[in-house]
Image 1 (cartoon, rainbow, N blue to C red):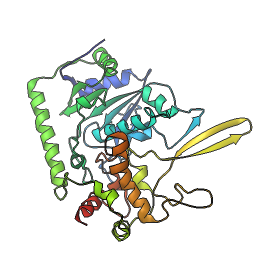
Image 2 (cartoon, helix red, strand yellow):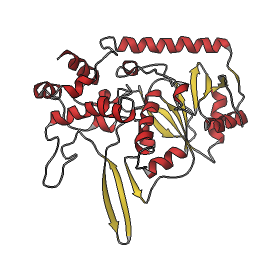
Image 3 (cartoon, helix red, strand yellow):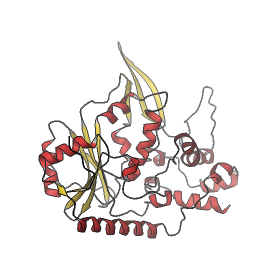
Image 4 (cartoon, helix red, strand yellow):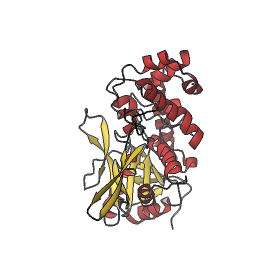
Length: 345
């Protein structure tokens, strides 16, 4: 079994051979440029011979959870497929959110059967961001726009330099991918000059993130979110919210659901579907009672969940700084602005 303690180097055209040659045994998903909302967006798509995939740049529109925790799935019986998969181009903000999913859906008393199947049968090849969107703010959450090997969240990581990939092994599981890499590609140790270019590239994207978020500080007191119970403050912060639920659906760490039973003749299924704590009917009980009837209460609950509850339950904040909630909001509510204002009241 192959293993490597030092970064390796492979040409992009050679790496494509790997993708083409594993099709018999793996489904492969990669980010592609999408025409939705202009040309600067990326979205995951199953590989079908199109080699114009984009592994560098920034995070996709759709969070990684769309491949591990589908919008609607049968949990009884489980509907997840057991065919092996490789997901490429995963960014650090999505890896960090997947760590929350692992803790919530695998390590707690309840194990979500579909997530377990998808997770066990998927290899993750992450990649560096070498650019950033205006909504990106992983630096404010004190994360980096590239994975950290010590986090143990990726199997392999690719850092693109020109038309080459620097390959870093991240897990025992990744050694299987490394075997395939050696089998199908010309692999060599990454030379010093390429590693120096990587350092420069990472510095550059860190500086861009700092410039994008120059009006905000990473030194924020998140305890103010739960401590602040002033109705006027939260009503003002949430006054533009239209309760579409987009912020929660697009969030890589949100996993709230609704479950319903569906029977057709002798066939029975229990269906799990995404839900949103921002919607009026969420958490409503028999008789029509709701613990959060008002918009500001639901709005505040989302911030509490991300910056208080998840921190207590999973030892990390629920926000990884991907910025999707900012990009998707039709009311242009900027989470960074909300937290900033809470520091000032």
